[in-house]
Length: 327
View 1 (cartoon, rainbow, N blue to C red):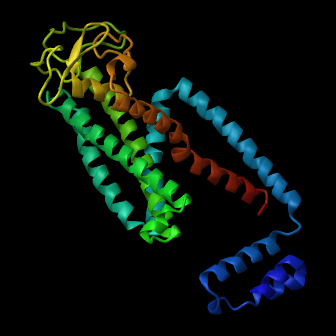
View 2 (view 1 turned 180 degrees about the horizontal axis):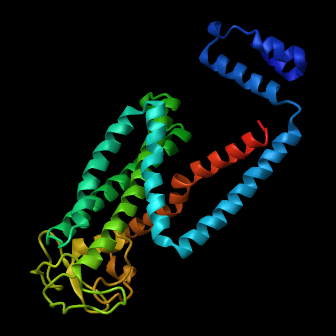
View 3 (view 1 turned 90 degrees about the horizontal axis):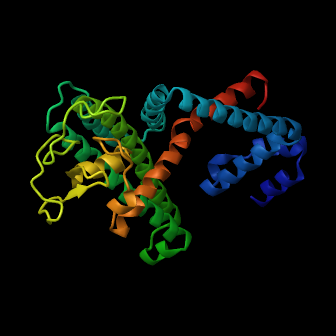
């Protein structure tokens, strides 16, 4: 391998020919990687101007794409959200099948099947009374699982970087793969479930019929009825519930704890389901340990661009480079 490295450093056509003559079958995986790395450097040596042009194309494409996406989102938010959701749902499936990630494929199929059933229930008219709670239970469950999975993955990556994996006699590459995989699962399904939850929340909000698009309620809401699920409230606001408590918003409308949390956190709705008054999240989440869930949701919103649109933009850049003959 010392000879290989010397050839790569020396450069020139002779060095590139000698690299091509190396027998890869006699080398270890690490040595094979070093030879491939040397071959890549030898192949692209002297193409600095071409590489600079490719970088400029990448930067220009990223800027233009970002401006177009922002304008699209502002002018046509519904179509933007639908296309983004479709891409987030389908693009990872392509790489999963191509790279034979069967474990991810099994989880993806299970999640898609249950989510399709829940979405079907949420879009039916008339809406069954038990559907809102079913929708929020499912998406809140996925939200909590993705949150916990992402945290465990992040901790695994940090422990590996600090070398704590050696205490358990785990190889660094295995520990890092484990952490990155969990982090990917948590972030991907966290982003995906929030978009599906928002779509279902929009359908149910219009179907329940307590308010219209103009913001005016279309029918009277009883003080003992939850505006999210339409079912009776049996626990007083001042009482401690066995399963769930009752929340009163600043507008004095009351809701089941599970319903209003799902409405605000999972469905990303920060207005009262009945009168559309702004919801005070800090007042609603008195437990400080629950506030990071809101921050995590904002993080998922930011990552949506990377998950849904980044592969498309990179593919567009590669297409432009191919048309211009750049490699």
